Amino acid sequence: MMNDGFILDRAGYLVARIAEIAGSDAPAVKKIEAAYLLAFLRKPRAAEVQLAETHLQRQQGILSGGERVGSTGLRKKKC
Image (cartoon, rainbow, N blue to C red):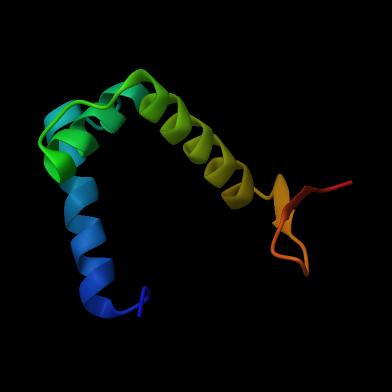
């Protein structure tokens, strides 16, 4: 269901709107603030920004091949 074409289209639209509001070269904090404004109609709290930044860093590590998902579903650093 999460890979459904409609969901992927909406996610792409959200990313485009975030880039339009914050700027495509904006720092992560500005993009997180824009995402919260679009999704929740408010700015994120400091703890939410920290959580989102941590999540983005993890995802970047996974996409760059720096981490892998083990059989338990937990992310492990490549040796």
